[in-house]
Amino acid sequence: MPFRAIEDPSKLRRVLEATLLIESNLELPEVLRHVVEEAQSLTGARYGALGVLDEEKQALSDFITVGLTEEQEGGIGPLPTGRGVLGLLIADPKPLRITEIGNHPDSYGFPPNHPPMTSFLGVPIKVRDEVYGNLYLADKVGWSEFTHDDEALVGALSLAAGIAIENARLHDRVRRSAVYEDRDRMARDLHDTVIQRLFALGLTLQGMAARSPTATADQLGGAVAEIDLVIAQVRSTIYELGMGDASRGIRDDVTGLTRELRPVVGCEIDVMFAGPLDSSINEQVREHLLATIREALTNVGKHAHAAHASVSVAADESCCRLTVTDDGVGITRAPAASGGLGLANLRRRAEKLHGTFAAEGVPGGGTQLTWTVPLGS
Image 1 (cartoon, rainbow, N blue to C red):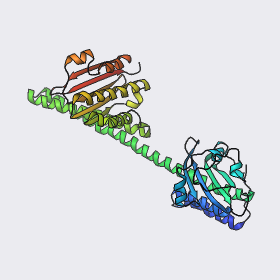
Image 2: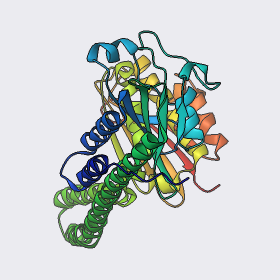
Image 3: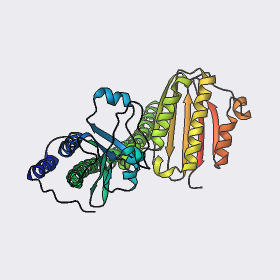
Image 4: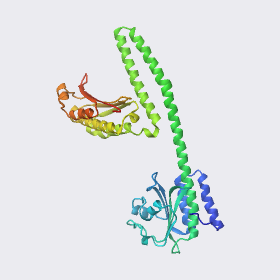
C-alpha cells in the first residue's frame, strides 16, 4: 500500500537528510542506526529498533535497538529472532499499528527484564518487491497510539533503509565477483604456465635419467616423482580456486574431521588433496569416505603409537582413493588379512561401494591403509 505524503517541511527535510546518508562513507550499521534514531525522534517514540532479515527471509539476522540502556539490553538477553508480533511482520510485510501490544492475538510476550511497551508501529523495509527487514517503534510518548502521519514518516525512512541495505549487498556481490575473477585468472595462469613448465621439466629429467648411470638415474627418478607430486598439488589448488566459495565441501569436511581427531590420534596429521574432489565425489561416497577416515585415524590412535600420520584424498573421473599412513609400530599380514585391528569394517565399506581396501606395512616402520572406490557407479 502507498504511504501518505509528508506535509511537514521540517520533517520532510530530515527524511531527505537521512536518505542522503546512503551515499556517505558510513558503514551500513551506522546508517541503519541513524534511520532508527530519526524515526524515533520524528514520531516521539520511546523505543525504536530495526531488524534485518536473513537470506532465507524467515528470521532476523541483525537487530539494532535505540532507547534501551546497556544494562537493559544486557538484562534482556539474546536479541529477538522474529517471533510474535515481529514474526507477523515477517510473514506479512505490511505496515502495522497496534494500540496495546499485549492484547494483540499474535503477541508472544516479553522476555524477563524487558521494559513494558504499549503502542507499536511496524513498517517493512523493502525496495520494490524485495523485503530486507522491518523498522519497529514502541510507546509513542503522550499518545495512546501512533498516527497515520507517523506511518508515512517511518515508511519513507524504511525505504531509505532498504536502499542502504540493497546497496551494501550489491557492493558485496561486486567485491565477491572481483575476487572470483582474480581466482579464475590465477587458476588459468597456474594451468597455462606453472603446470606446463613442470611437465616440460619432468620430461627433460626423464630423458636425462635414461642416459645416466644407475645411481644418477635413481636420483633423477626421485626428482621426477617429486615433480609429479607438485603437479598434483597445483592441480588441487586450481580446482579450489575455480570453485570459489563453493569450494567448501570435501576438503573442508576432511580438514575439519582430522582437526577434531587430533587429540584422539595423539600426533600431527598432514592432509593432502588432489583432483576435482567436490565435483566428482557424490554424497554416498562422501559419507563412507568420512566414516572411513574417522575409523582409520581412531585405529591409529588406539594401536599405532605413532609420532606422525597423514591423510591423502585424491579423485579423478574414475575413482576416489584414500590413503592413511602412520609411522607407528606397524602391522603383520595376519591381522590385515583377517580383519584385525578393526580393519574389517573399512574393507566392508569399500566393498559396499564396489571398491577395494588394503593394509600393509611401510618400510622403516608404520602402516599404510589404501581405500579405493569407483565413482559414478
